[in-house]
Length: 211
Ligand SMILES: O=C(O)[C@@H](CO)OP(=O)(O)O
Image (cartoon, rainbow, N blue to C red; front, side, top):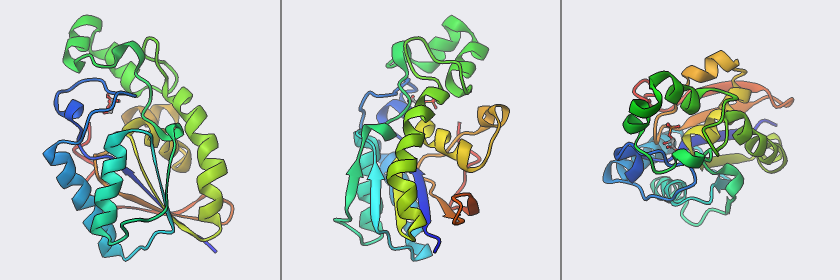
């Protein structure tokens, strides 16, 4: 029996809007972010999926996005597990800095490497590989077994914690993951085979504007 896994990045946060590195800091959603979460929820509602459980991180922007989605799909009160294993990549010393100021200081290329490379961490923070080293075991032990039992599972998390998952699910190389950006509030619907590989992937929205 194959279940369903829906991954969604939180809606725009105050610090996304201000163009600040966020990581484990905890800004709220913006008005636009609230709308994005609702739009993502409406898109899920159209599929008719009813979830058995939801997972989210320890950070408000992901938790609020989840609440807004659950409102839209009429599943308020769904059992939800919060865990910091799903938190955003820790941006270390860059947390709270403006991304354009960082480019001016360290150069466009270096900042892109810190933001999107697989194994080069920002100073004092986590690389995508480091992030995956906590997200992936959590997925394997807590989330995947439920999907393989046929449950429908919703995960509301973050740009880079989800990139680390998508990298493995979609079998992306280090080069391919460098180019992958996830849009805020756009759900990705996966069905899995019994061997845990991906059977289908459906993106409910537009990822092309993501940066
Ligand atoms: O600041 C962050 O924590 C992340 C997500 O917003 O930014 P980036 O897209 O640069 O990895």
